[in-house]
Amino acid sequence: MTARLRSTFDWLAASGLLALMVSARPAPAQEPPTFRSGVRLVYVDVSVTDAGGDVVRGLGRDDFEIFEDGQPHQVATFSFVDLPMPPRSRAAAAGTVGREVPARPAEGRTFVVLLDSPSTARAGGGASYDLLVRRVARQFVEQSVSPSDEAAIVHVQGASRDSQGFTRSRELLYESIDRYGRGLSGASGSIGLTSQEQISRHLDTYRVLQDVAERLDALTGRRRGIVWIGAQLRFAPPDCGPFDLSCLAFRNAFPAMLAAHRDAMSVANRHNVTVYPVDPAGLTTDLGPGELDRRAALQAVADDTGGLAVVATNDFAAGFRAIVRDHSTYYLLGYVPAVEHRDSAFHRIDVRIKRGGLTVRARKGYLAAGPAVRPD
Image (tube, rainbow, N blue to C red; front, side, top):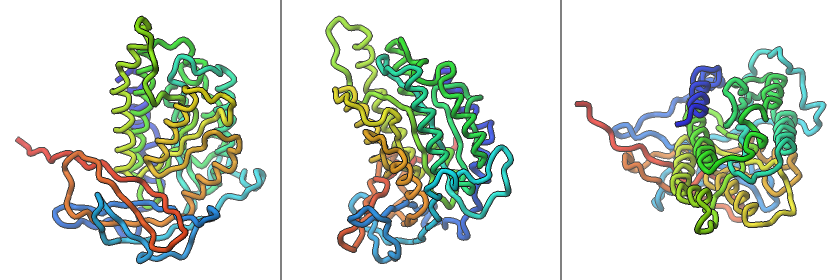
């Protein structure tokens, strides 16, 4: 683990982020019960839309079917969350929240915004890319975080002191976003990366995603989402010449990077955390293999966790509104697995709707814990 990554983990544990995760929301009225020798409910957030992409309300428990590894399971718990969407106008959305924070309201949304940095040697952009990340992140906060919501900012490759724990102060969030691009953060800090530095950045990104997903498990009773802005990752091994030692070193490390990707996605699924990748570069004319590979990586993260990817578009407002809608109106289903899995294996979840013409989106499964260790 790099010193930079260790400092990020230390900050996550020591700062107000973890404490606020625990206190941000009251526990649900009914705690998840324990079944058959410790087998607990598995929760799944489910978004349902019609052919026009509009949210479908009014569904009941009997409208859903849940399958784990192809086997049907009864829907043990069922609830519907329907929070009001933030106003569309920027002036209305701004509210009165500055550095002074009023008392916490009863209901709201919760977001963790990861500000990542390019992990490739030829990411390009430099200061202009840093400006794009800051602009897009500020737009998300301005248009999507209402006065009743809470958000945290995490600088994946930057210094831990530049991050911001959970707050409803829009001003504090802006100040943290404006610190993107300092030191190793931002595209400017990725210029001239060696192959080993590229590898370390890839691994750091996935480990931070994994760690934040694990810590979000302390947040109960509400959908847990990560808005991931600014990453530029490789998802396919590069083509290397026989004497390109730097490229070959990167290619040889690719299995470890793919394993880190799978681990991060598995942990996010285990804790029912949805990831929303956002590409601040927007719609570009570059359709080369590197660009398509980068988009595929971001889309895969969204698909794996039941989220939405805001890529290949300059209409960030529409993408952000879709993310907020995901956190505002959804069904929360719970079921009891047939057995308590202790096999460290991935177990697929398939949620189906009995009514025709509707689209269901939910996480694909979860990674079970490993075998219990007997004390000596």
